Image 1 (cartoon, rainbow, N blue to C red):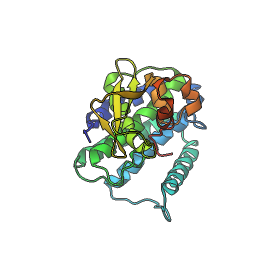
Image 2 (image 1 turned 90 degrees about the vertical axis):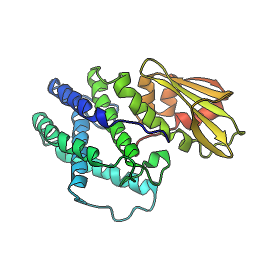
Image 3 (image 1 turned 45 degrees about the horizontal axis):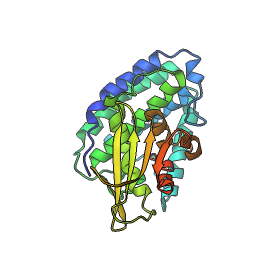
Image 4 (image 1 turned 180 degrees about the vertical axis):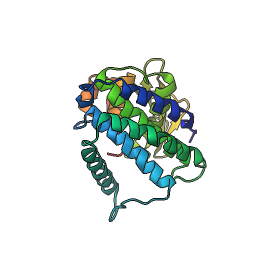
Length: 273
């Protein structure tokens, strides 16, 4: 798998987060986001939670481990409960204190990622990409997608631009689309069949997966293209992070060719949930 470099983006992305939060009005903090039941403040609180958990790993603190994880759904349920508990507790914290906490935890979090051997096995695999073991560079890229899409949820809610650029967006969407092959694992097609996903605009690009010997894999190029899907960057990040349902996204996705091969893309989720 070709490495995705995201480590250098954490610091400027986090700086943009603080600038964004400092610019919010009192009313902005209570605005709803595409993260379902979470407000702007709730999403910011969740970003703090992930920072705190990362620092805990740096300090070799195990926290409150689950009783048993016997399936992917068990893991999702455990993480969802952790997230909900934290967000509820943080509702008693003021926005200014939340900003202060985020500033306090940013550098230790980033330092932890820099301390990792990028080629070594990660503590946590990227399960949504179908991996049982992942290298640290992929784990870090996954964490980058989390920091990016939650910040974008806030920006989307308060209508502020800033990170929908090629510098920040492309590595994020390139990481999410590493889930394509895993999402086609139950889809059969003749050898050589290719499915292409195109994200429009300067920030986007093209990704192709090909069927070979009963498996799908990302390839640099492939012909013929049996199915082509074209999405805007806004539709893409929302679809793959569960902010849009497949039915909601379908009206904004152009599909050419065999539409039966578009379903795994429209149902793809590249977050834990």
